[in-house]
Each structure stands twice: as structure tokens, then as C-alpha cells.
Image 1 (cartoon, rainbow, N blue to C red):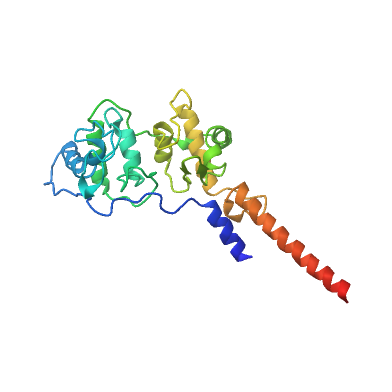
Image 2: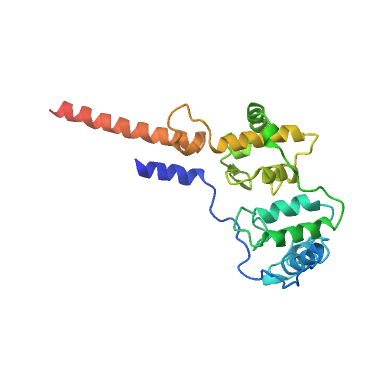
Length: 261
């Protein structure tokens, strides 16, 4: 039966690599000690981000209009007034930089040090008035309320167990590796095909409850028996059907043997 579980897992998980970081062209400037954070961020931005987002964060609307670091064809939105929020999310999850702006970003290896990320976030934040990095407090949240809110707003794409799933035109990632801050950032940013939820749609208090539920869903109390890796209803149902088919075939063979005798 092990191969049945392997098939179920393969069907449940999203593709391993929809987009990978650029294989070359990552620039780590040799800035002297004491370089202001925004200045270091500008140097990092110029070497790694301007190909797609423009030399001053104005964006590059047309694919291939700019050939930048690593010969990456440029095409990216403006970063003016996005604030520290978006930059922090995309850099700390490894969503950026992309090797191809036409690919869906996905969580991958972070290519910059913490200090470099802080510098780039500071520089992007300096391009205009934008939201800061959120400071969620999931310890103040309510898991039951979070389950209700997650079911209403998130489970349609991420599954109710936050294991991710397929959507039209993309893949909703699992949230098992997401930190509380990254979940809060994603809700406010709306990366890729995900909708943006403003504080009017999901308040900060409700967001605390959602994060508390996602943290619970990473290690839930499985009182219903075998969890099958908490893959979700579709792959779990597939495993059940395969077990039932094997049981039916075995029963038919036993009955056929008795009839022959």
C-alpha cells in the first residue's frame, strides 16, 4: 500500500519548482562599515531589482524593455508607495528575485543576508509613503474564530488545513513554513493571484485569530484517527477508494477460489 500513499502525496503537492531564483547575477556590494542602510539598500536594489522594477522603482511595464543583472528580461510593477510591507514579504520568503518575470513566484532559498534584506526594505520604503512591516499578535487571537475566518476567506485556495492547493492560473502554497509576520504580510499584500485584504475586510484582531489557527493547523490534534499526512479531502478520498478497490478485488479472488473448490 505504500505506493498508493506516494501517488496521493504526489497529487496533493504543488509542483516543486514553478520559478527559481536567478542562477547568476546576484550582486552583493562591498559597502564599507557604517554605510547608511538606505544607501546599501540602493546598491543592492540597483544590482538585483532595477532590471524589473526600474532604476528608481518606477516599474518596467513591458517585458524585455530592460536587460539587467543576469540578463533577466525586465517587467515588474512600480515599487513606489508599496512601503516596507511588500519588500519584506517577497525578500524573506525567497519569492524575489525571479529568473523569469512570467513565472509564479514561490518560496525558495533566500539569497540575501538579514542585514541586506533590511537595507533593501529600507530603500524601497524610502520611495514613498507605504505600509510598514506588520506586527501581529497571534497569542491574542482565538483559534476557533480563526478557523471560521480561515474557512470563509482562505480555505477555498489553501485548504482548510492550510496545506495549499491548485487554483486557476496558479498554485496556492502551503502555509506550513510561513511565520506569523509572513502570513500577516501576505494577507495585506495579496501576492500573485491572492486577493488583498484590507483592515476593513479583515481587521488586525481577526488577523491575529487567523494566524493563531494556522499555527494550530501545523500540529493539529488528530482525534479522528489516521490523518494520512493531513493532505486534504481529495487525496485522502483517493487513498480511501484505492484501499476499497484492493479490498473488493481481494474479496472477489477469495470468493472465486471457494467457488472453484
